[in-house]
Image 1 (spheres, rainbow, N blue to C red):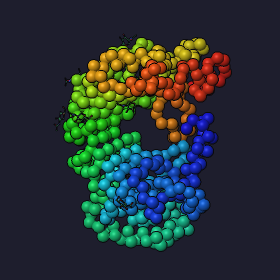
Image 2 (cartoon, rainbow, N blue to C red):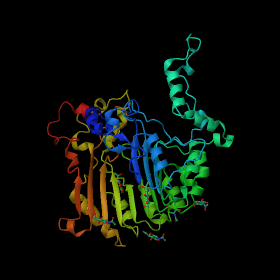
Image 3 (cartoon, rainbow, N blue to C red):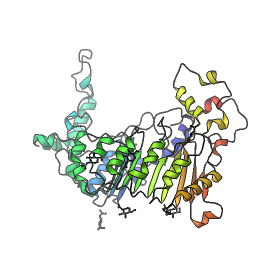
Image 4 (cartoon, helix red, strand yellow):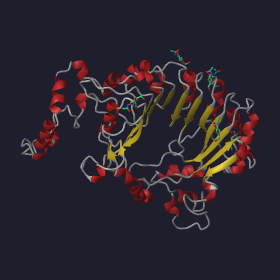
Length: 470
Ligand SMILES: *[C@@H]1O[C@H](CO)[C@@H](O)[C@H](O)[C@H]1NC(C)=O
Ligand SMILES: *[C@@H]1O[C@H](CO)[C@@H](O)[C@H](O)[C@H]1NC(C)=O
Ligand SMILES: *[C@@H]1O[C@H](CO)[C@@H](O)[C@H](O)[C@H]1NC(C)=O
Ligand SMILES: *[C@@H]1O[C@H](CO)[C@@H](O)[C@H](O)[C@H]1NC(C)=O
Ligand SMILES: *[C@@H]1O[C@H](CO)[C@@H](O)[C@H](O)[C@H]1NC(C)=O
Ligand SMILES: *[C@@H]1O[C@H](CO)[C@@H](O)[C@H](O)[C@H]1NC(C)=O
């Protein structure tokens, strides 16, 4: 998180800390959308804040309980992540019983970010019900610690709890299983617990790793899959050709990635999102990617992509997009940093070079930091009109221009945000009558973004804290 917003975040997240975990006696949800990081109730489950308030899905254990108890859940959107400096989730996968016999509802929509499918049961060291509690001194250096063999109070307590809560039954159950069952990975257990053939919408993003087992076993079960979001090429490759109608790729790509993708799925795609966040990708976009859309897709009605520009309006790219015969709407991402601002950002990590010493104090200041031409209402009106002219199909109704940084706010460890962090603008254009009188477009956010500091006044007094500003 930003240093300067660390404090304000405390108040933003405070209501979350007051959330009580969902229990099977609560009403069943039909969809679950949650971020699992730390569980505020792990240490003091009986505290007031953990027994009152609105039930929430605060840990992997809780989400697993909901999936096991609620037959009507159709959608799960789960992000497992560390946040801040110290907050870690209770676990990275669901605590499916290794002896099997559990049932999840047949989900239609599944989005997983950070989920760990792969670790086989014997490799686990955390507190699984079916593991005998391991004393903390298990891994210490025996020769240095004379008393390593003395069972300590904590461990005795753990064993007592383990016994008391009936975990010994699970433990014995697992011991009695055939070896094939015992060796199942988390994916293997999830495949047994759920009918995957109802899944229409699937996302494997972020830290979620695609294991060989997933490539081997998942695609043949995904009979209903229509929408996929991922940047994992091995998984895309394992699907049948031209089965997806919606595809989303948000992240870096290699030259040729889009061509490769469209060779497999281009004919069936109705909507495509292919882009990278400005602050993640050194190469933000390629005009060659836009050029192949017209001959590699047949039925594209919606497109989301980066449009590269270099100081002039990217009229050729916009024309290529508008010429897609079925296109109805588009979301187009423009970068916000000028070349010198990007160069400064690249140099910022190089301890041996100092941007100001090399280029002078007055270089790359104020408006020079922003990519030209600036996008305002008048410019967007012209771009949209140009696109309408090129759109012989006449179906293009809506175009939204996204300028700058639209990624989700940083929630990792403390960091110093890059200059362009959260600098952005959004201009929405449409043929709807209500905006026509005043032109096609409305600036919804970030008007005259090039004249402002982030969240601050217009540039008038170039002052001392410029150094801090980026
Ligand atoms: C699930 O949906 C069915 C049909 O709509 C309904 O009868 C049932 O009560 C629901 N079950 C739960 C646990 O909400
Ligand atoms: C899918 O398309 C690719 C690229 O056109 C091709 O190489 C591959 O053989 C196709 N796969 C199947 C199963 O048809
Ligand atoms: C479309 O254009 C690209 C790049 O020029 C080319 O590699 C590809 O083979 C073309 N595809 C078709 C179907 O014509
Ligand atoms: C094209 O997309 C429309 C929906 O936008 C769909 O109804 C139609 O079947 C698609 N056509 C082909 C040839 O895939
Ligand atoms: C900028 O891009 C356009 C096409 O997108 C190209 O015609 C022009 O030469 C480029 N200008 C520079 C300075 O690279
Ligand atoms: C265009 O925008 C209007 C108003 O926001 C919306 O009602 C309409 O469904 C959109 N059309 C398309 C094709 O996205």
